[in-house]
Length: 237
Length: 237
Image 1 (cartoon, rainbow over the protein chains, first blue to last red):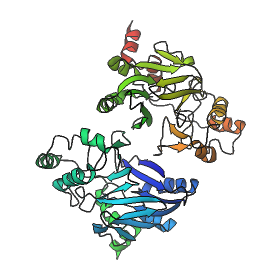
Image 2: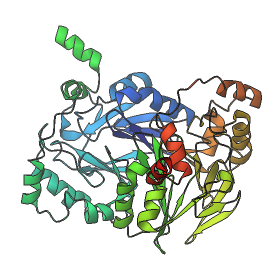
Image 3: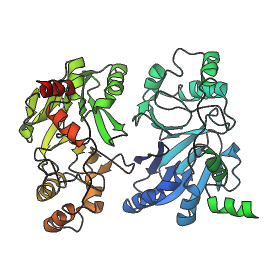
């Protein structure tokens, strides 16, 4: 498997490029609109064909690159089933496997940051946790149908139950970490360690974080597969 | 081998944590002063003992964390032989292997960005290229005894001659790349592809880059193993 972690500095987002080196089929998880030229160039240099863009959830902090990449490459945009993104090409159910050449990507419903969030387990070794679980942290739960208790259950029941050596690749990082493991997060993630569900809910509900800068722009754009021009047309019409 | 890439956003520096999971011995390559608390915490959480801090070169863009880490942990500071850092604990020669448990780190003299720069090949698979080779780029050669022709020779004769599947882990990245391979860089690094030595020298000598913001502070501090307080004392005395 070819596996590349890519970083968008402005939103601190990690995009993941996954490809089967034999079939040359590729997918991007959580591409960022501002980085699509970088991503396209890399795909071209590696001789890969972009088959899918896969979202962990509807992002509030950046606009997805899926719409533009779909327009340019003809790839399919895939989202979690319940995300109700009418413009998506395909919807994944919880535990549904997505095949990319010989690579198996398993969807894991992990609501809480948003109510339709998925993590993706790639070849049973690389876990893309999106905004459910960060390295020594987790996504916020105070908007977009977020719910702290639901996130606690998702992380402790669906992610912390995976083997300890599962690699954790988050959707964001703000401190310079690139990878962790489930074993490490179970032992050292202070959001969860030593906190029961009630204490976690109280903690999360008192974070008092400012809204993401791009939220008002990003959420409607991402509900439209990242297609901003159509949104503008909609507003005009 | 435990291998972790860590990022310092301010200077866009990658620090590498390498450890033998059996002996629990660890080393950091190019630690950044501002990140030593993060790095120490990670070492502690992973149950590792910091044995060495290893520099690829004398940095001009950030202050090394080696001095502080040595003070706190008792680790040894290691630098390329010709760097003339009198406060260093150990000096590596070109092609000299450094052992960390069962891990072998081989020093590769790659002058050009500075005249004493080393790359490090870890277990013959992971190449830490420092500022000699970046992903689709390379370090500048216009100060600190830098020399474009020397860098061209270092990269083309010492790094591009390694196997194509050797993983390239650079000392900096400014565009969100985390890893590449020697095969990829030989094919797609526009600083080198299609340029002979003369053309490379002309190109590098006309970059007209501004000096790194921290240069005046970082270079003297790094010549003193990152120990700023001693520098201040020296100035006063």
